[in-house]
Length: 114
Image (cartoon, rainbow, N blue to C red):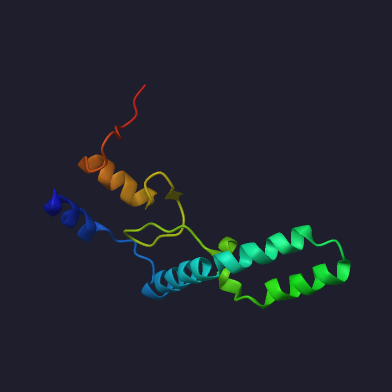
């Protein structure tokens, strides 16, 4: 099976730029690093009643790195790095999903016919 996967990987033509993939990895690291602090500040913000206190907490949240927000993270295919047409169930883009399904590399995936 190892050779099959290797052959399929060679045939893929649609790779994202390496810099974009690395940027996304950096975002993932930042999200993980600041997750606890961000959650703590957001909880303080929810429980605060004084508007001045809320404003101060909001400013602290804004001072966190922009890329540490989970909404900045983009799902990418783990094989090609393609950001669009991403299938969460497999972690693959549609191109790789199609190729691997035809090769029989995805257990339980069959071509639909009706």
